[in-house]
Length: 110
Image 1: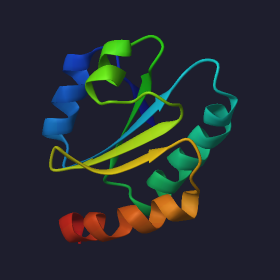
Image 2 (image 1 turned 180 degrees about the vertical axis):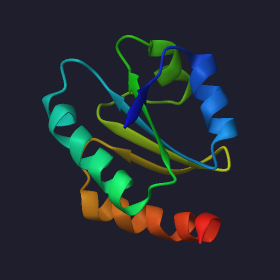
Image 3 (image 1 turned 90 degrees about the vertical axis):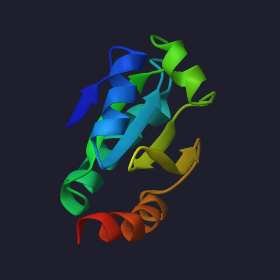
Image 4 (image 1 turned 90 degrees about the horizontal axis):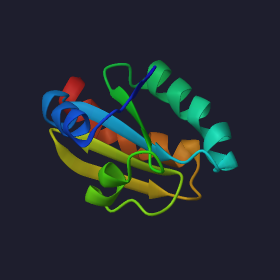
């Protein structure tokens, strides 16, 4: 399940504390985001269960989006060990996301 981020400090703390974190940046007006979000959640929960999920409403928290150079929705940022490792924006597929997460995830958790 996604943790809904309330502040920049909360997101930064999660990045540092969690060995693997996926940040899902979206806006209320983004219809693609609404369809993609449950698919991303299902992928992570089924295949990468040790990864935490964070949901950022870019229109509500523009400081969080701006600090991470997120200017499009949806945008996914994946952090391993506090460092941005993967960035996906606008159009990407679940299979593509799965492939890119697999290697760094397996190096950390398996």
